[in-house]
Image (tube, rainbow, N blue to C red):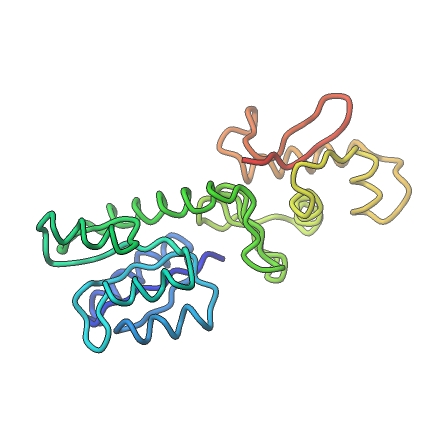
Length: 229
């Protein structure tokens, strides 16, 4: 699950943003000033921050400076100010994007997705922790037995999940059909055609175009792998 921290002293705004993010399949944390934001990122694994500039106790610009001392999490700044100087200041302090209030929620979601794509692209294979693996827009939570594609959860059967977990635990490694069968079914391979069927079903769920897969690739004559992005 991708965790997003929303920081704004206006509780109505944080609640509204949270609703849109939850609808996209993200997990949301809230903070109402920069000090609370710092406490959250030190105790939780946060993947993106949406932060207002004008806040009590510790404002967004100073909070960004402190965050950049510890983390390289993508930060989208929010502000009622629209002057170019404010945007430049925020970006120079370490923000990755800037959006002016009032804003279109759909535009904010689009920017969130863009920053998450860039974040995972810089590190093609991102292990958020020992149980979460992100490859491009494909995310596997092994502990929660959940799979997400571009932030939206997809449902896999138990066997499909085991196959995908095997491949994502070994990004770039090619597994033969026989090896996949023996590792997943825990028995000597004898009915390997069932592996091909399950691979096809996985592709139908995680690929935009299953006939031209982005993630789950075949290496002809050898087997299958999850492709590095």
